[in-house]
Length: 346
Image 1 (cartoon, one colour):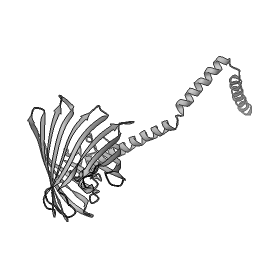
Image 2 (cartoon, rainbow, N blue to C red):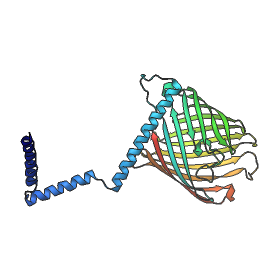
Image 3 (cartoon, rainbow, N blue to C red):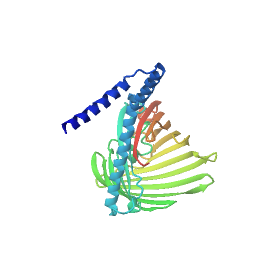
Image 4 (cartoon, rainbow, N blue to C red):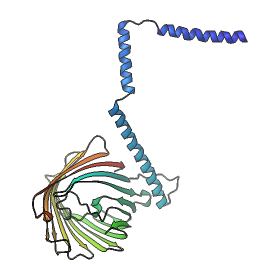
């Protein structure tokens, strides 16, 4: 048995030595250079540079975040719908949007504002419910209060969460009901929002929509927003259109209404780029505390949006010039630079 074990060991040793001798045999110069070049190519493919590694890491992080977000939204959908585990899963179009804004309003100091918006669609409930969370200014913006600013930044409304019940969603009409919490007037308040909307065709290439959003806060009282939106396709191109938007805003404890107007030309250059040129103006029908002039001012701005690098990464650039009443109607220049990342399906 001992001699057999020694024989096996001897055989293995001979194999190793023979392999080493073969590996140590000299190679012709041409074959040697080709081998070295091939090895260098393989090393470069296996070991990417710093930029490549960072790109791979970011892509993987975004993919995992989207998967986890989608899985969590599916669990939320199942909770609200009591869906069985063996039922076929429906496509969930929930998404989250993260923004970082660098803002320099005309005549004011620069600021940096991060924001988050989450929209949860519940397909198992026949899309009758949506969950909403937002810290973006757009959800609480009053058109006209942004004149002289590249973006509205009302500090008394910086977060809201709500569940939306879609009573009807037809081609021309829509009724939504929101129940939720919002920070307003430095207080966390319960609120209810009833939104009524209608859209139809006026004439050739013209469409019009009317929308009324009525809010009621348990401490601040009511707020009502009535808006009219007119659009016309230009040169038979659906990606190029003219828009006129007017909003009337009434609020508890404030006399009269704020009337805001936006006129603009909008174009979708391609799948990745869009451009808008807008004119804004605002007027107060009554003077209130802190308001000395009825005409708030007017503003011209350009909005550029571009999808670069990855399908989920965007940036926006908004240069503007305004003549606000807060600056005695003197010319003021402003700018906004925005970075945006989208997680999920949008």
